[in-house]
Amino acid sequence: MPNVSILGKKLLIGVLLILTVIAVIIVSRQKRQEVSVPYIQEQEIVSFLKDGDIICRLGNRPWSVLFKNLSPNEKRFSHLGIVRIRDDVITVINAEGLSIEGRDVVNEVTLKEFLKTALSAGIYRMRNIEGEKISDTALEYLGRPFDWQFDMIEDENIYCTELLYIVLKRLDPEIKLNTTWVKEIGKDIIPLDVCSQLEYFVEVGYWGGE
Image (cartoon, rainbow, N blue to C red; front, top):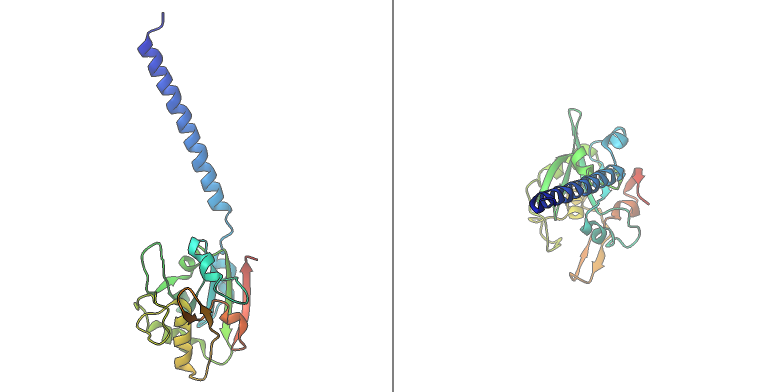
């Protein structure tokens, strides 16, 4: 008669092997899914960029859907930043909230990092303001906390489209950007579709998405 303890060990080993195979399959599927997500790559758009361009993206995070749906006209984007190019180094200055890395501030990141969650991207260029002036002015606001009050009256705290508004108003006090009323917070905010809706901007290109 077989030894019960030996049978128990064999059964345990068999169960562990099955669990290991299942774990490997799950991890492999997750990796394939991650690879298959069509994130926008920097090489796709880098040749179109100029200093001072506004770069928009649709992120893959749960709150990206919320932010894009605040736009009243078209809902392609959930975040934007300002391109800065110096000595062939391309960075993006943006007011980032709900960052996984905990950087709820105006920061400067590489183009690659800005695009790492981008399901779509768009580039817009101001018609009548020099790009270098736009990016230099944006640089002055690095480190300002993200504006969770969405208050455009003060600029000590800044949200993403508010950064664009502040910079452009400094360079051209006559400029006006569209706003939309958000009843949940009881305030007007500048929506993400502002660049595609106003004649101040020209669309350079759009990649991915709908």
